[in-house]
Length: 174
Image (cartoon, rainbow, N blue to C red):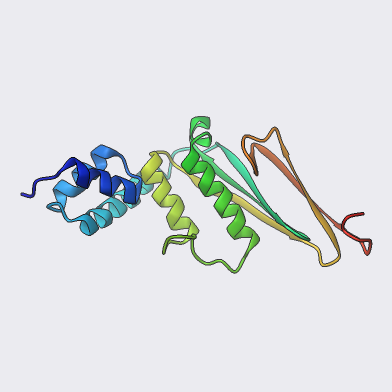
């Protein structure tokens, strides 16, 4: 049985974002091997996500991303409004909106995971059911796409959002 140091637990926590006790348990289960512990946590997160999938996820955020002539809006829900104030949750909502805007993006940036796998990973980290509920992308070859978030909670995030595409031959500034 390998000795599990606090530094090793911290290293795994920094790498995965998992809780301290989960990191210690993963390292204990894998005899202190860091990469095996990462895999153990991933598998544990998948199991946890499967157990929580039946729970209602009706709270969350709208995320928007815009580019000239194009905008994307996503809705990602969790079980409680408390999670909507979580910085990790907000970062995922922002990034998923950016990915939706750039439909060519196949994986979640900075990882080798898909958006769905990243959300599953977030379920394991936060401990609530989290679901991508809706995604919409509007674009217009000639005109503008306007976006509005009612009472934003952070830049590009809120509870209610609207996208409108206007086709026109007039310059976008007009």
